[in-house]
Image (tube, rainbow, N blue to C red):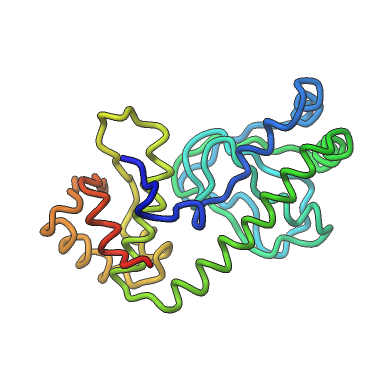
Length: 221
């Protein structure tokens, strides 16, 4: 089910997937000419706050927080020529490409459209983060968890057929960190949501059954 008209998902999602489509085949090949692929297991650190960036990362599969397949991370520090202001770690086993900053900057210089779309994505990400900070600061625990589940559902939705249930595979501690509430509250709230028919659970898996009820629980206006 689409969230169109019932929840402003664009305010919560990054949009760097679209920027790569701005590159010609030649320029894209230049961008990835020296990429190296690495597998990361759950919990592995991809980059650490304070480290000097030497390139950017292209998500190949699975999810890193709100970054999905085809998205870029770590490029902000390269553009600003500063150290990483934050850290990134894998929530799921993932395949990630590392692209040296020289190739990234070369691609930017060769494609004005790529640069334009990246700057637009960067501006949008600032809006997403500002929205997250301001809204989450004023939300209750149930509302925070509901919004987190809505956003994660949207990420997982793309890998499913229209007739398939959307399944989220997250530990309760990861959900607690994403929603900014205590783990015991996540466990309690998931039981409440299950009783209300919003979702079902199988171990750590969460199956979203009624997104309209979930949006109602988010109390988003």
